[in-house]
Length: 62
Image (cartoon, rainbow, N blue to C red; front, side):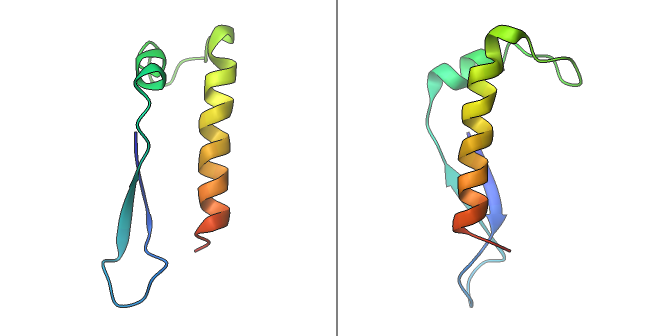
């Protein structure tokens, strides 16, 4: 998974890319069609992903 965020450090690129390798997460999320309801068995996976993004937002506020 790759997240692109605003660069918190002056003088560099406008954005930076953060990588999180998790083949199991990718495999599970690839089962979900875009713009469809998330299946109940994937709630925990999606919650972990949202938690990761939330932590990044707090670490690199814009």
